[in-house]
Length: 390
Image (cartoon, rainbow, N blue to C red; front, side, top):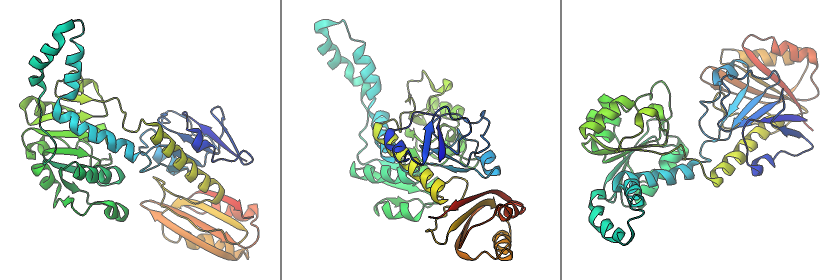
């Protein structure tokens, strides 16, 4: 039986994928085989000795010590695309919020409480202070064309916007989904200099940290409106505030409030609501649970952030799974050990990703503890698991 610890409330539609005869699920399990979570911060948490996998019901994994997990051979999963529609809808709302001064108008109209019969007249007299442009016919620059970016681009076209996209690493799947009428930016500078609105959907890493800064802001049109529902760290707040003060940026809408962004009339802060829909939470939970079950029961890796996708249909009687460093002759050393112990290989697959590798080998017959220990002793091996094939 596998044990799963939940560190956040997880949708029952996801948890119900784990059959009760094979899984024990609880928040108080102290040494689980796997963990499923949403936003719980694991960085100060001691990783359980038996831990084999962590499934994040969401896309970002900043709350998980991925490097530490990789060093221990723990596979970390996320759920890219499961909350894409929820985020997309809020991004579209943010485009309108950035233009039409809707939030300011709502706050002002609420302040008229108590004015009685004067309210209609005050509304007609005061509404001119909340005028703003329509988004139809304006150019939207989409930086990052993953699941969310593609949906935003396609739906913005339906709203009458001229859309330009930039993503040097666009996947084949995303390219198939993206409308052919989205203009391809020749460079990031091309997108920044020609867009009336810019929405960020890039991953956060050392290369993208603070990508919206003094240099990139200088390239943009005066009065540009920027929407950020990807990661707060993509924007250098001090440079943004200077650009708002000068009028370079007309409005900034972000789903990641920070102290220095609050109290500014030209910044709209939303309390990280991008994926906060019941549909999104359910989709993420189901996807995370499905991936975790596939890994625990079959050893297959789907949507891991630290190991390559690696799947193999069952054959033979026993499955040997290993997570290891991506170094020469790793697979050769494993197969040599099996051959020396007269174990016939029925099928196998090995995939590498950056510095990590993941190998699945199916053999005819059973494998002894002694042979397993020999495989574990190979330099660079981080984890070895054995799954009996029925």
